[in-house]
Length: 340
Image 1 (cartoon, rainbow, N blue to C red):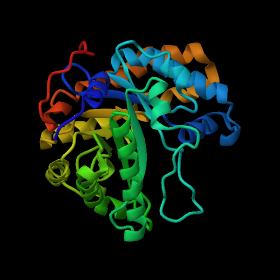
Image 2 (image 1 turned 60 degrees about the vertical axis):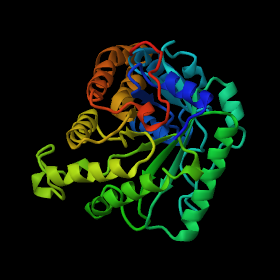
Image 3 (image 1 turned 180 degrees about the vertical axis):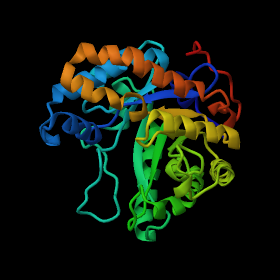
Image 4 (image 1 turned 135 degrees about the vertical axis):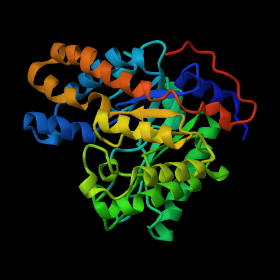
């Protein structure tokens, strides 16, 4: 696969000098409101905008010196984008948060008053959209989603912007945290990665969850009694998903703890997964929300400088066996940025 100069430049800004993406994600909107609601007792829709913006700014200011890039949203995150370290690239989210529960199929929606052109003008080095995707959904639903991604791929290509597609696995009739869903998750993740590696989508990097639910892997956090996969079976699922991808892919933390995400990355490395990094969000910063809500900004900054930095450094340490993104493209050259 070949890559245009503009897309290559954008990916170099988002990755470190080794070609690995060690990125921080805080584009959450409704999820962040829920965390604030749980910490304060305030209804989620009444959490002050200023509090959300201030939280994102603090995370960006303190943690981006340890990240190759940060993923933010243009609705609440632009002030935080201006607070990031000079060495950190910027990804901006293009989708609306969540999905319309009154419409079947978890169909994606874009932000009405933004475009790829506007996001790039706001300083983005790349564009991210989130897609709920299930290979068990009807062809009618999935064809709508395929066409949606094709349109976005074309829009990003027109602006010469790297396109990151975040795939969130689900099943219409299952709880995503259930043992039942854990049985089908490897198939959904693997087939989704294969589908959106196809050239018609013009996706440059896939952002995916790990292909197993770590809560059901034998030997992880003493959960052997509930194990669904042995460690070797889990590694085989990692290998199958990795082999299905024809584009660079990075892992998201899916809201799990920092320890659990670290275990997942260790398992991926043991399996020989060719992942090119991470976009890690709540596993890095979510425990700071109640501190900020109860004790204020200075207490949050103290926590971020200690626990937050420790969290991101533990994730970064797991990337040593990652595969540089540029190895997936023809004429790949080493990036010119300073090592993170």
